[in-house]
Image (cartoon, rainbow, N blue to C red; front, side, top):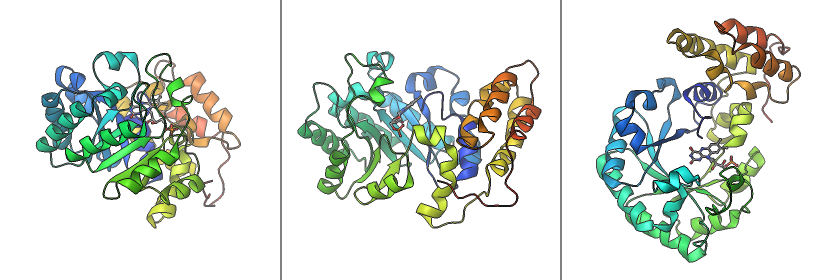
Amino acid sequence: MMDWTTSHYRYLARQLSRHTLLYTEMVTTGALIHGDTARFLRHDPTEYPLALQLGGSNPQELAHCANLAEQYGFDEVNLNVGCPSDRVQNNMIGACLMAHPDKVAEGVQAMIAATSLPVTVKHRIGIDGRESWDDLCEFIEKVSEAGCRTFIVHARIAVLEGLSPKENRDIPPLKYDWVYRLKARYPHLEIIINGGIKTFAECREHLEHTDGVMLGREAYHNPWLLAGVDTEFFGRPMPISSRHDALRAVLPFIQSELDRGVYLSHISRHLMGLFHGQPGGRQFRRYISENAHKPGSGIEVIEQAMAKVPEPAGATIVPA
Ligand SMILES: Cc1cc2nc3c(=O)[nH]c(=O)nc-3n(C[C@H](O)[C@H](O)[C@H](O)COP(=O)(O)O)c2cc1C
């Protein structure tokens, strides 16, 4: 998620779950090819398994960037066919490509030829003007014939004329049944469902009909949810026993980022959700908001903010 799933968020998320697949923000092929490639692809090996999400449609450029993903150590390369912003529509990036399944297929084929990484596609169930079941099936068929096996489906259409990107994440109704139907119709494909999912109970229900679940906003605003994923869905031990321990595990990384000149406030804003709903959580967030931006602020701001939250004595907290 743009501006949200930065390396700093992902480092925290990885303390909470070892097995959840994490995704980068979308990076456009143009930025990677003409910009500071190393900066855009920067991540910590701790973050694996990690997918790089690309935005673009030019097959040569997508191929080049898929190859870069492999060189930089990512585990998967994903193509964004879901982002509705005007800026990306003008460059034939994101959800507008739902109207051009041949173009997406060509891009995917070029990516697959350029890397041995899995190439996956994240998309909508349609866009305004191309929102029928047959349109969606045509998209899936063309893109899967090009070699894509995994589709991450945001279960609502994107309205490109008239809704903002934010509205496009809430207003078009969720149609989970369409995603279930895709899995039923194309059982050989891996179909991952996304959109409005918040609880493990909802995840379990979706997993009855699909191969996987992607959480966006809830995983960001309430990252502690991730602390239950390894036990609940992977049958593995919980990697961390408290929110405080998770934050302590991030401190050395924060210090190394500060040492290379990153501002504390650029890091700390991605930690704000950790004590979501906890006594003292508000004071934690307030202390960070009031202090992290001050010149010279360092790790002590995080430690002092953490001290505002009572620490449970030796108890393992079970995520909600
Ligand atoms: C701030 C923000 C940025 C996002 N950026 C991206 C992005 O870069 N690529 C992408 O595929 N989806 C992006 N999304 C959409 C989410 O991945 C997801 O599809 C959408 O929020 C619905 O899922 P959710 O209800 O679990 O959040 C973004 C969402 C938000 C809130």
